Image (cartoon, rainbow, N blue to C red):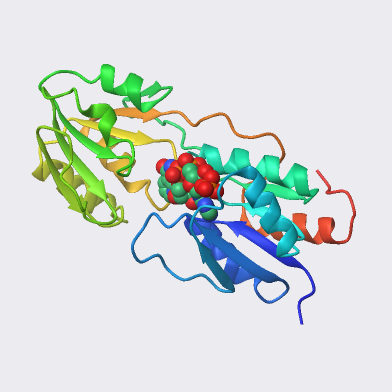
Length: 252
Ligand code: NAP
């Protein structure tokens, strides 16, 4: 019977994989924000929905006897990561962030970096055809650009009409093969791709496709990460937990 309880803040493939790896040795609770309609169910226990801020998250840590938090949220989910950092301090709970490394441009890429979506929206060229792979929450930033046509990819179809003047929606996950991404970009005559620098292999095929088609990539830089321990892989989380649970200091 596992004696230690780990809270995984999820919403990423890594968080899902991590729950499967830790479930044998720990009681694992994965927390999801509840943004997608039918998320894959991770191993262990699942809770869904916001906590109600940092203090409420801290109360949850205490009431559920959480021994450690693994913040495996998306690198752009800055609010929950900030809350997790504050809650961990309040409840005196060890915390580690699992963050995939960002993508790096390579030869043949036409990337321009932007600090956020607002600045990218201002720098979009008029009369272009832009592929947006940024989810649905921040689409409003592009509302004023009625001189641009957008192809918008979302996991679930929107339930209310989008505020963008000229657009089409494609639903589903990123395509795994760059050929499929190229076909999509060719079909819609895309000349610009706007994406967040999420990192990871799962959604990297679009970048390869953009490189091969010579498409302009407007890359949104990651927000500043919260301070604290950071690891890059599920294996490193396991090692970090092993050290923390034994109260040893983590080796470099
Ligand atoms: P966010 O802006 O950092 O968080 C907004 C609020 O959503 C938080 O204050 C929290 O509500 C709630 N929340 C977020 N993640 C949660 C979690 N794992 N469990 C419980 N509550 C959570 O987050 P976001 O950017 O909207 O992302 C939401 C979720 O989608 C995250 O879990 C993230 O991993 C995933 N995701 C995000 C992106 C992205 O581009 N941002 C991409 C892919 C996946 P309370 O304050 O009420 O606790």
